Length: 587
Image (cartoon, rainbow, N blue to C red; front, side):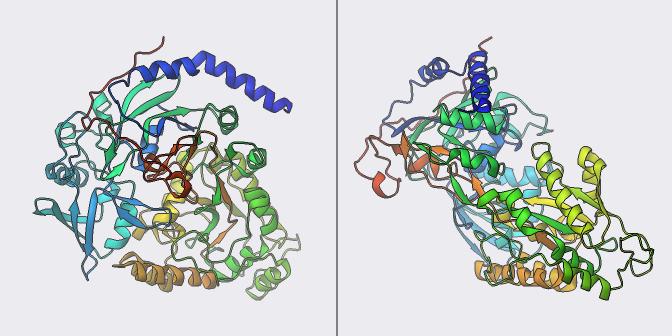
């Protein structure tokens, strides 16, 4: 062990003693689950994260509880996304989209005996209430495009959108938009401030059993032996928070954690080599669906000029950016921006390259020349150029963004373009947000998360904000036409076709420049369980996890792939729902 590893191990050991996170603490939690009496292939799955266990409400998405629900965990989403980036059934079992791409007829699983975790049955009243509450009280972005919802049969609804775009809307909702219990939320006027224990009530395959704040962990129990026709493999799930990825990795190495889940916050590439070659530990490497990119501002000179954008793109050192972002696992990206795992990826778009001489020639031809002889170029009107490079605000990745900004500034300097880091936007989240919202940036370095990459792709952040309500400024007619056509697609074929067209358009007008296609690392252990399914850019904790795992020495999960299906299991878990229980604080 290196000195740093020993130091981390000591700190981790001390934190486990202080927090009561050792084996005794977990065992005490298990004794409170005696009423769940069934043979589950996996008794307890421990998930490590750096997200905090500090908010337990189905209206919150920033805490460990909220992000875990992206995996169809405590809540039941209407649709989910599979490993290939396609929407698949969940609470909505069947659906059709009409030719206008505005009307969705959906059949729901309200006849499957699903109950809320307080024992009340799930009904169509809950489904209708969810849409009404989010549309008229909380103004949720998930239903911003919904015009009306009406019940058409005992188990069916018709969803009418304000504008064409049903296929894209379903993709936006998949995994994120979940049904709410009417009997709880109908009396809540301010959902964001409601923090009663019932705020965590869902109707998914797991319920929150108790929270140990001292140990910074939540404990969840399966509500039955099966859910929506799939046998549940994991009886109990512990979600434990760690202060950093360093301590989380050490916990994985020590066997205290079975797998890592951190939504879009994968391990940095610098930590990946330390995971290679370790017995019983898989680094969980996959192609990342998301990526870092430069977004050019179209509302301010000189980045409103395609010639300048092309020259700036040619100036970048992609080999250095590849190593900085992805280490030895990174790849130089193409002008299509979106990464290979995404639906509609076009492999024929040219790979980016650095060519400072060509960039200088383009700038000369476009009138960007050094007029005063100081070695830096002025614009065609003779005005001084000094670009502000604005990084996306992210405290966890601040050092990473700083390094990317430094590289970009240095590369622009190499072709005679003066640029600087916008330090106020780097340090002040409110100021940073105002720049994005108002579109008053020239070069913005941002990140498309794996989730958004799957749902809408990075182009969502480039389009003029009047369309997306995000921070894009591109109003190029060709791009906006293709963007809207894709947004209004009624089927996958049209969506894929227009996604390919958007990549080709970027290769012509340089709205953005991806900085790297990297690998994601969400490590997991292989000594106790088999059957893991690794979603690209997401990891092995996903909507399939609860059904496919089995014990390595005694695999029997009916949904586990391949060699895991070697013997039948006995399933005797009760079909009932158990009352809310909160573990008293250990203090």
